[in-house]
Image (cartoon, rainbow, N blue to C red; front, side, top):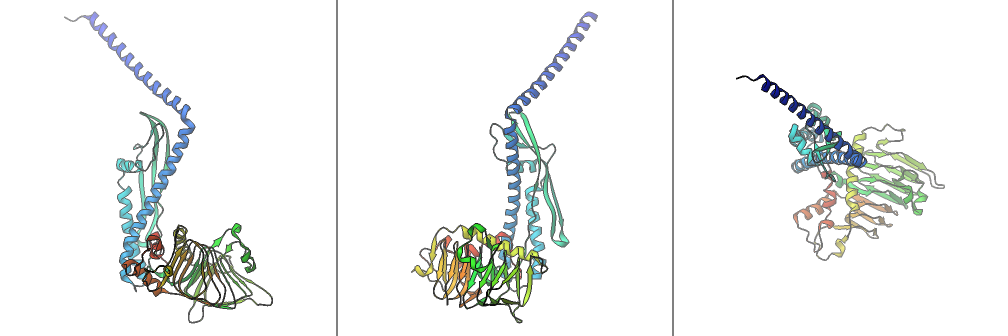
Length: 454
């Protein structure tokens, strides 16, 4: 039988139960908020700094993963290129460049184009450990991968991951969050008909080249870098160099330079020098900040350029800047390798070396007092004394000093032969290890993703 009193009691009980439940939820929420507030007050500055570091680490990891993918795809394609020697640059840049970007895009899409939870999990693996807690990548909102590619121009307009929310979590409590965008810089590649155009260089001085004496001739491309003022040496003051220090410097000498290009990140300083750059039959391209013709009585300063002159000082229009930057980037990648040389090797001192040409790879200065045919790679200086004829390739991580009456000639076939002997193991050497192989320094350049296209 229906009991009104019992029904009323039941309704009241349910009402009180609901009030109690709401109170519990409210108290819990307040407790969570208070706990979060107290933890943030206690660890606020530390957490904020830690999140900034996590954001930086994530951005760097994403960027480096893109660079690694670009280099890996490039290296694989380069193997096939070596079988196409003689193809035109335009053909290779048109066909191979578009194929390269398609493969690169496929690789990047496989890494980050999954979207949603899968993308968040990938990014989360890039995060460092968090002291006293952990980092997570939020899926609300989800990070979004953006890739805009113009296939007709082989151009990646933009590539990035946006709305990446990194949370610092202690237990089940999110203490603080930061949102960031991770850029993936588009690779810049150029294909050539050969991966060994660098073999056409005769001299590479990372911190400058200094030439004096009566007469000298140079056949082959030349590169000269710069150095800081603090590294200035008394022996160099007479050349008249100024900021930027380094570059190509000629003092009271007659010289002729022939090759594809002369490249320097500094100036070309000519003091009391008579210099012929290229001739009508063999034009040359010169890239430099400026050319300083400095009078040095009684010697007269005079020079002639047969070819193209590109100067950054504004006196001559600096066209084809991208080509210049590619050369600098390529050679700078070699400089990093040369700086890491920790031992000394000379084939002349190796009784078991059976190679056709000489090679020197060392972290010390190299002085030539006699003719030399082969390759020199040193982290130090190269000093070429008066009357030495050099054929091959000279790379100095520091400076190159040439004291006159010399003939310096590039040796494509010489360098090619040395590299092939190393790869095929036909030039035996009892001490020939990874630090004593020319190919480890020269052939490594294409892996950086840039090849000089003539």
